Image (spheres, rainbow, N blue to C red):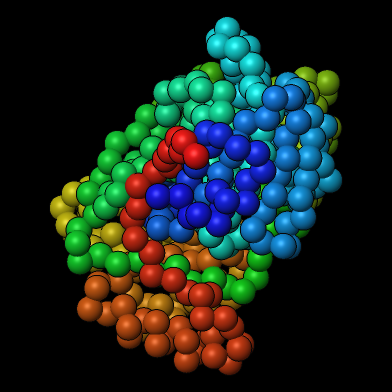
Length: 431
Ligand code: NG1
């Protein structure tokens, strides 16, 4: 049922829609999605809800139950002008712009204007994909107003590309998890083309998400660091493809990660500069710029690129995803915990996306009895996820509270026990 307040506050009369899309916690497979390698998230029982009613013109009105997000309005079109970076309206514009173009391509009519009211219950800037949940819920609601249905996997692809509108070179994990997850299960997701398969979660497994109290603001400071990693991987892929004499658009296209990992020291320099790239990649100046350095892409460090350690993380992480899937099928939570620990070390040492607060939380969760723990999502702040046996949840929470949250006077919801929840839904409401 719709939360009445959300629906009652919508302007106008007549039929309305209510969409919800969950956030997600990635259990393992970090920074692999944009490399065409697998991930293993669960959708969580925290979601974004959007109530919407059609308008007779092309205007979009956005309101939010949280007063921190002021009302916004704009006119629909294939390329709506972006609001300033970080503005919440950009996620609606991203979804709507992509849908206008997609419906035109399919000859499926236009997108109507509408009034939207948003209630976001996924903690923001925590690595829990609140931005994708917002984009997916807005997009689904808008599609509901148009009376059009599209296959979920097509929408996952469309919305993944759409989110790049906000300036991050993001992969497709979050939108696919929000749209395709099933309650009580994790979802293994492969990319290019998108494929998913459910992975059962043993009933005795519990997941604690603990925030580092440092925001991972991907529409802000973290954006350049995230884009830097995506660019480093794309450059490393071009160097490897040349050395190995094969064609590869993503690291995932390179056959046989084990031989590459074994020879990494010979195949890739630890670090390179922008000036050295033409010689390393065999790609000349103008094409290099177009392929790897589009003008709109903010990078944290546009002249220096780490290659070897980044690839070591990505390829070893992909192998850990496959091992984690097998561990879940075998109900072997200890093995899963060990893989999560290794993933965290690799994210911290080779990928450089952890922080001292995230490292500390991982350490405390383990000391409190977690079977494994790791940063989840992009990193640079945000949260960790700890795998805990049901009977140990209280002990781990107490450890986190005593050693981390109480001394910092943190709010109680800084740490959550999350459940593997179902993907997005859309209801039509006649009132
Ligand atoms: P979060 O943590 O939600 O910002 C980001 C990307 C994912 C993926 C992870 C790292 C977006 C919308 N999401 O997630 O695609 O690359 O980082 O594994 O940018």
